[in-house]
Amino acid sequence: MTPARTRRIYVGYVSLRGRGLLKFSIVVPTYNEAGGIEKLVTTLDAVFKANGLDGEIVVVDDNSPDGTGAIVDRLRASYPVRCLHRPGKMGLSSGVIDGWKFARPESEAVGATDADLSHDPEIIPAMVRALESGEYGLAIGSRYIRGGGIRNWPLRRKITSLVAIALAKPLTSVNDITSGYFLVKRSALDGVELDPIGFKIGLEVIAKAHYGKAVEIPYVFQDRTEGVSKLNSGEITNYLRQLRRIYALKFSGGKRAKPPRPAAEKKTA
Ligand SMILES: Nc1nc2c(ncn2[C@@H]2O[C@H](COP(=O)(O)OP(=O)(O)OP(=O)(O)O)[C@@H](O)[C@H]2O)c(=O)[nH]1
Ligand SMILES: [Mg+2]
Image 1 (cartoon, helix red, strand yellow):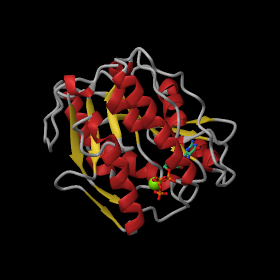
Image 2: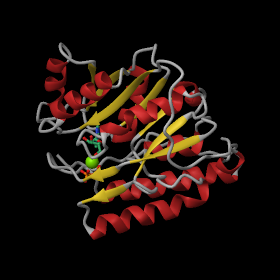
Image 3: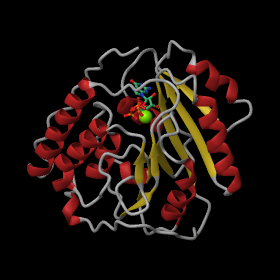
């Protein structure tokens, strides 16, 4: 693992004109998101079309009892979306990792976003342009830089998020370390072993991938209006286990990492 401090990380807002058309695949892990998945797919498609982007949407559905996967299969006829069906609830991060493997081979970048429209799709063009510029290997949707924010979160949730970020702060100069909204060059993931535990796949990428410079693009996080949260106390424990492993890897110079154990998913159907 390359320690984060040996890499120069640029953090701030960029507005870049791209040099070319970057093909990308954005993965949406889903579990019981039937209420909002169609709106997400149509909104992403509209953003792609309006900005001339060549994006693919990969939904990774864990056999949602509410039929989310079947909705996505139907949408496939009209939108650039495909569904990877997994047999049962296996976790957000492992879903994103499986989605990246399933993504079309021609995509040079892969990313992640939630199904509940908490992540503003309007910043995707800025993320894509940042990677197209060749200057950045990772573009992160950021709640914690100027222009970003969080709408409608209860105080308890805000404090949990700030504590989670404080715990990971020594690892990187990225401000929104726990962001689940990002786009990364596929080549930056070559040979990188990502821990499939829990909810924080963005942290795995920020801490381990070979992306060179990262840029944070601000957006205002909206609390979900459809469906229910899958974040539970089990995921907080998973986050602490994930952090412990990353710190162990960092301070052993990448030589003494424990093999990842599968995430212990709490059933929240
Ligand atoms: N495939 C898959 N997706 C999951 C799993 N757990 C959560 N997700 C999805 O991961 C995304 C993030 O989960 P959320 O429940 O929105 O978690 P959160 O954003 O921290 O919490 P809220 O926005 O408050 O609900 C959503 O699209 C979920 O449907 C899982 O076990 N498998
Ligand atoms: Mg959410």
